[in-house]
Image (cartoon, rainbow, N blue to C red; front, top):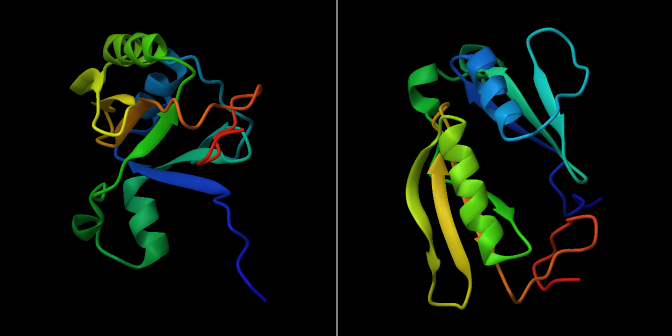
Length: 143
Protein backbone atom coordinates (compact mmCIF):
# COMPACT_ATOMS: atom_id res chain seq x y z
CA UNK A 1 0.00 0.00 0.00
CA UNK A 2 1.13 3.56 -0.66
CA UNK A 3 -0.20 6.86 0.55
CA UNK A 4 -2.10 8.69 -2.19
CA UNK A 5 -0.46 11.95 -3.19
CA UNK A 6 -3.00 14.47 -1.85
CA UNK A 7 -3.95 16.55 1.15
CA UNK A 8 -7.58 16.11 2.19
CA UNK A 9 -7.93 18.41 5.18
CA UNK A 10 -5.83 21.31 6.40
CA UNK A 11 -6.57 22.03 10.05
CA UNK A 12 -5.51 25.35 11.54
CA UNK A 13 -5.30 25.56 15.31
CA UNK A 14 -6.69 28.94 16.35
CA UNK A 15 -7.07 30.64 19.72
CA UNK A 16 -10.36 32.39 18.84
CA UNK A 17 -12.41 30.23 16.50
CA UNK A 18 -15.20 32.78 15.98
CA UNK A 19 -12.76 35.56 15.11
CA UNK A 20 -10.90 33.24 12.71
CA UNK A 21 -14.16 32.17 11.07
CA UNK A 22 -15.22 35.80 10.68
CA UNK A 23 -11.92 36.57 8.94
CA UNK A 24 -12.36 33.83 6.33
CA UNK A 25 -16.02 34.82 5.88
CA UNK A 26 -14.83 38.39 5.20
CA UNK A 27 -12.67 36.96 2.41
CA UNK A 28 -15.86 35.59 0.88
CA UNK A 29 -15.57 31.96 2.00
CA UNK A 30 -18.67 30.04 3.09
CA UNK A 31 -18.56 27.56 5.95
CA UNK A 32 -19.94 24.07 5.50
CA UNK A 33 -22.18 22.45 8.07
CA UNK A 34 -19.97 20.83 10.69
CA UNK A 35 -20.17 19.61 14.28
CA UNK A 36 -19.80 21.99 17.20
CA UNK A 37 -16.20 22.96 17.85
CA UNK A 38 -15.09 22.77 14.22
CA UNK A 39 -15.61 25.26 11.42
CA UNK A 40 -14.93 23.89 7.95
CA UNK A 41 -14.62 25.55 4.55
CA UNK A 42 -14.81 23.21 1.56
CA UNK A 43 -12.17 24.04 -1.03
CA UNK A 44 -11.45 22.58 -4.45
CA UNK A 45 -10.69 18.94 -3.50
CA UNK A 46 -9.75 19.79 0.11
CA UNK A 47 -11.26 21.29 3.23
CA UNK A 48 -9.82 23.96 5.50
CA UNK A 49 -10.81 23.38 9.11
CA UNK A 50 -10.58 25.77 12.04
CA UNK A 51 -10.17 24.06 15.41
CA UNK A 52 -9.42 25.44 18.87
CA UNK A 53 -5.65 25.41 19.39
CA UNK A 54 -5.89 23.89 22.87
CA UNK A 55 -8.08 21.06 21.57
CA UNK A 56 -5.70 20.44 18.67
CA UNK A 57 -2.77 20.22 21.09
CA UNK A 58 -4.76 17.79 23.23
CA UNK A 59 -5.59 15.64 20.18
CA UNK A 60 -1.94 15.53 19.12
CA UNK A 61 -0.67 14.97 22.66
CA UNK A 62 1.66 17.96 22.80
CA UNK A 63 1.59 21.13 24.90
CA UNK A 64 0.14 24.20 23.14
CA UNK A 65 3.45 26.03 23.63
CA UNK A 66 5.29 23.74 21.21
CA UNK A 67 2.71 23.88 18.42
CA UNK A 68 2.86 27.53 17.39
CA UNK A 69 1.82 28.11 13.78
CA UNK A 70 4.85 26.43 12.25
CA UNK A 71 7.30 27.59 9.62
CA UNK A 72 5.03 27.08 6.65
CA UNK A 73 2.71 29.02 4.41
CA UNK A 74 -0.64 28.30 2.88
CA UNK A 75 -0.68 29.39 -0.75
CA UNK A 76 -3.54 30.62 -2.89
CA UNK A 77 -2.72 30.90 -6.59
CA UNK A 78 -4.53 33.38 -8.82
CA UNK A 79 -5.15 33.83 -12.51
CA UNK A 80 -3.41 37.22 -12.71
CA UNK A 81 -1.04 39.62 -10.96
CA UNK A 82 -3.95 42.01 -10.48
CA UNK A 83 -5.81 39.36 -8.47
CA UNK A 84 -2.81 39.08 -6.12
CA UNK A 85 -3.01 42.78 -5.31
CA UNK A 86 -6.80 42.72 -4.99
CA UNK A 87 -6.74 39.76 -2.58
CA UNK A 88 -4.05 41.38 -0.43
CA UNK A 89 -6.30 44.46 -0.10
CA UNK A 90 -9.27 42.24 0.76
CA UNK A 91 -7.23 40.38 3.37
CA UNK A 92 -6.06 43.66 4.95
CA UNK A 93 -9.63 44.96 5.06
CA UNK A 94 -10.69 41.68 6.71
CA UNK A 95 -8.10 42.16 9.47
CA UNK A 96 -4.92 40.55 8.13
CA UNK A 97 -1.45 42.09 8.33
CA UNK A 98 0.13 42.37 4.88
CA UNK A 99 3.71 41.16 5.36
CA UNK A 100 4.84 41.66 1.77
CA UNK A 101 2.90 43.58 -0.87
CA UNK A 102 2.54 42.03 -4.31
CA UNK A 103 5.74 42.06 -6.32
CA UNK A 104 7.80 40.21 -8.86
CA UNK A 105 10.02 37.31 -7.81
CA UNK A 106 13.15 35.88 -9.40
CA UNK A 107 11.43 32.92 -11.05
CA UNK A 108 9.00 35.09 -13.03
CA UNK A 109 5.96 35.04 -10.79
CA UNK A 110 4.21 37.67 -8.69
CA UNK A 111 3.57 37.10 -4.98
CA UNK A 112 2.59 38.74 -1.71
CA UNK A 113 2.08 37.51 1.86
CA UNK A 114 -0.34 38.21 4.67
CA UNK A 115 -0.67 37.02 8.25
CA UNK A 116 -4.26 36.13 9.18
CA UNK A 117 -5.52 37.30 12.58
CA UNK A 118 -4.99 33.72 13.82
CA UNK A 119 -1.25 33.99 12.98
CA UNK A 120 -1.18 31.71 9.95
CA UNK A 121 0.72 33.06 6.96
CA UNK A 122 -0.77 32.99 3.47
CA UNK A 123 1.03 33.49 0.18
CA UNK A 124 -1.04 34.94 -2.65
CA UNK A 125 0.68 34.08 -5.92
CA UNK A 126 0.38 34.31 -9.67
CA UNK A 127 2.53 31.73 -11.42
CA UNK A 128 2.45 32.29 -15.20
CA UNK A 129 4.00 28.83 -15.66
CA UNK A 130 1.17 27.05 -13.80
CA UNK A 131 -2.13 28.33 -15.17
CA UNK A 132 -5.14 27.29 -13.13
CA UNK A 133 -7.86 24.97 -14.39
CA UNK A 134 -11.23 26.52 -15.27
CA UNK A 135 -12.52 25.62 -11.79
CA UNK A 136 -9.47 27.17 -10.10
CA UNK A 137 -7.65 23.90 -9.38
CA UNK A 138 -3.86 24.20 -9.17
CA UNK A 139 -1.31 21.77 -10.58
CA UNK A 140 2.45 22.45 -10.31
CA UNK A 141 2.98 22.48 -14.09
CA UNK A 142 -0.41 23.93 -14.92
CA UNK A 143 -3.43 22.59 -16.75
